[in-house]
Image 1 (cartoon, rainbow, N blue to C red):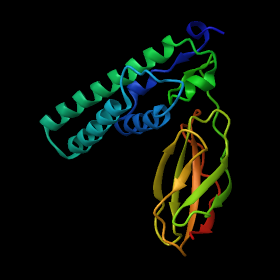
Image 2 (cartoon, rainbow, N blue to C red; image 1 turned 180 degrees about the vertical axis):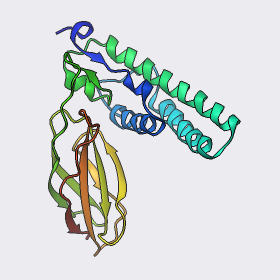
Image 3 (cartoon, rainbow, N blue to C red; image 1 turned 30 degrees about the vertical axis):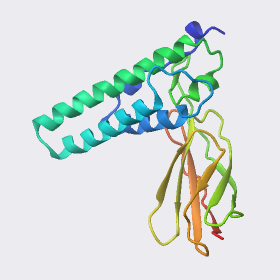
Image 4 (cartoon, rainbow, N blue to C red; image 1 turned 135 degrees about the horizontal axis):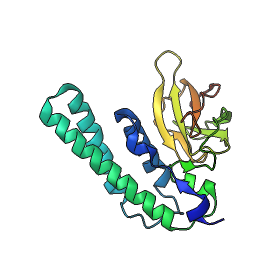
Length: 207
């Protein structure tokens, strides 16, 4: 199966809303960082992260600022979209033949019928508290998921973002208070709805 005929990367991110583009950039950074399939990116992870940081700051400033802030936001958005397009062109040129390999970059794949299926709910297998002050999260992989978004909390406060992880490995919650019980939930990233629903939360005491 040739890349040029059958696997194309969607460019719909360029039409995303302000917040959607920011979230998408964060996802791509998480998926490309330390990804062995893409070692020689035309835009480094450090540079892409800097563009995302600038974009996020400009977005916030434009929300409450004036024309100058709006102009700066549009410049930051254009720079972000250009960098993402450059990465897309590079990935397209690699001739990858598996959709899963391409999707591991965080980008969407254009399917032959232009439809994507919603993702199933992740299933948390267990939490591991064998290391003091942290919990390791074990979950079952979701077919066609590009990444996983994890949150945790104590049950008495709001859910706290742990971040986006490109796979089910090495999802750790650090700097926890020994003796405190923590709950964890995870959702998959990708599919036609961009996110699956949240998994059933499970809890364990930090040692």
